[in-house]
Length: 160
View: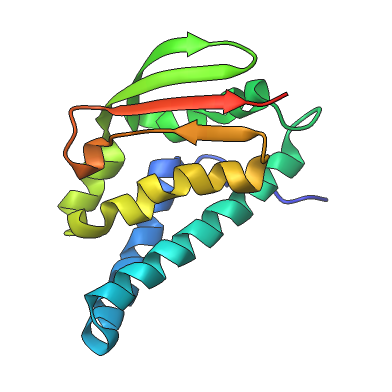
C-alpha cells in the first residue's frame, strides 16, 4: 500500500509550521557554529531536497499520471484554510497563471521570528517541486510577498 504524500486533515500550512519549528533550531544552531551564510545555504538545500522528494510522492499518487490538471487538482492542499488567497489569471491545459494576494505562510514565518529565512522555507519549494513532480512543469515567478512584494506572481507552464 502506497503512503499518501500528505497526511489527511492536516493543512499544508500546519505541516510547514511544524517543519519550521525544528528548522528554526537547526538554523540558529548552524548560524552559531558555522555562520549565517552556511546556515542559510544548508536550510535552502535541505528544503529544496525535501520539496523534490515530496513532489515525487505527489507524482506517484497522481491518478493517470502527472499533468498540469493533476497539479491543479492538488492545489487546494496549499490554499486550505485560507493559507493562500489567489486570483487566477489563466488556466488551460498548458498554462496556469495566478497571483497570491495574501500569504499566511509569510505571516506565519514572520510571527515565528523566521522572516529572514521564510523565502528559503517556503518560496524556495515551488520551483523545486516542479523538478520532482515532472520536468515538463516549469515555474516563472519574479516576486513574492515573503520578500516584500504586494503579491506573488505565479506562472506555471506544462511542456507537451
